[in-house]
Image (tube, rainbow, N blue to C red):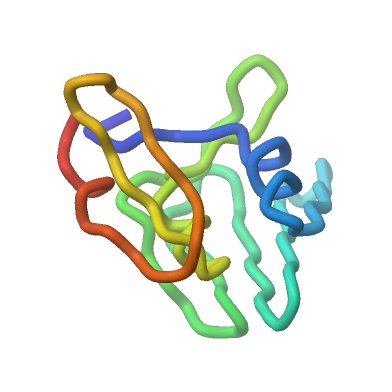
Length: 106
């Protein structure tokens, strides 16, 4: 969406060892892992990471009953490295750090 790769947040975040909670009434997603707390509201680009406001390029969306968010933002907030293979149209997540390759448009 808008040049960003969105992921189904529950499946990906839990595979990284994070806990994900959904509040359907408030349309909010809480993600926690170790000392990281992320609060995301569906449709909003501004989110909270450990109490600090940050801005994603694309707000969280609901598709087929699942919440999707930009892969780079959540993975790096959890301390993971993210890279993007434009030719294969594949995102890779793993290890500490960050890689600007995931910011390349698709």
